[in-house]
Image (tube, rainbow, N blue to C red):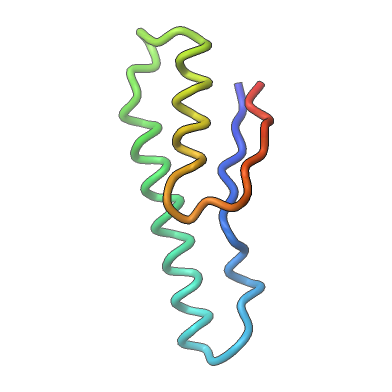
Length: 72
C-alpha cells in the first residue's frame, strides 16, 4: 500500500535565508508529525480499507498540498 503525503517544496521558497530556513523547518515538522501518526497505527490489527482511510487522513493533515488519490 502506498500513500502520497504532499507538502510544499521548501526548496522553492524565495527570499531571505531565514524564510528559506523556516520553510525547511516547517516541512520537516509536517513530515515528522505524519510519520509519528503512521507509526502509532495498529497496523497488525487494522484491515486494508481502514488503513487506506487512515493514510488519506494523515495526508490531509497540517501543511498538506492539494489532495491526490493514489492510495493503492
